[in-house]
Structures are given as C-alpha cells and as structure tokens.
Length: 187
Image 1: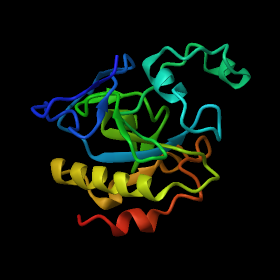
Image 2: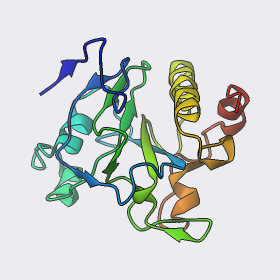
Image 3: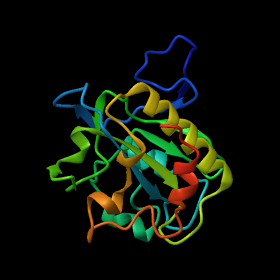
C-alpha cells in the first residue's frame, strides 16, 4: 500500500516522502533516544536500479524466486526508515519514532544494538559505484531536517553501516563522498 501523505502529517513521517509502510519494525526502547543516523546502500539485484524490488523487500513481499540472487533473501525481515532512489525520490517505510530493522549486529561508541537509537537511510546504489547528485542533495536535505528535529544528533553522529558493523558490512562504500554530504550540513 503506497500513498502520498497529506500536508497535516504526524511529525514521525516526513511530508516530502512517499509513505510505503513496512511490517518490519517494532517499538524503540526509548523513542526520545534518537541519536544516530546510519547511511546504507542497496540495489536488487545488485547494480540494477529503478525496479520495485527494494520496496518489495522492505514490505516483505519480494518474490525470492524471481532472481537467483534473491533466494538467500527468503524469509529476511528487514527495513529502513527512508530510501532515496537514483532520481532523488524519497520513500519512508517506518515512522521515525519506531525501530526499523536496518543495522543488525552493530555498535557505536561502545553502545550495541544501533537500531534502538538510530534512523536508517538507504541509498539506491552499490558499495563500489558513485551516487547521483540528486541523491546527495536529497540526503543532505533529509539529514539537515533530522539534525533540526533531534537534539542528540550531530554531524559526527551520521555514519555508514560499515562504521557500526566493521568487518561485516562495507556500505555505503568507498565511493560515498562523506565530505560532500557533511559540508552541506549546518549543525
């Protein structure tokens, strides 16, 4: 079920995002403890962009028989709060005060279970390919909005999946331009 949000949206949804709810979330231990943003990348199949497969995965309805690489995703329950496609379009799958299932086994500054206190943003892409200008623009807008909304966030608390799960994850990858993103943020 996909629907555009009306202008009087609850603050847990971004008005500019296409609301595409995922069943893969639960309650945070403390909804006021949002203090980390985790940047990821995803494409399904890897390196192919523009299809519905990422949305299907996050909504739990991916046809795992439709591509040989999807067989390993059978039964996987995963989501992110936000997804930015190659054209800069923004989708929201989980309300910000809820816990999306994006980080897995993770730790930041000695604190484990990053899903408890983070917002997960997926960029359509791969670990080894550049991201688009409009993706950086949209990501900067979203991050600036989150920095303004959550007092425990700062630029130093915007990290990659690889930072919170080193050795296990590599995204968003070496092609991601951290200085480009961070230079666009004011906080």
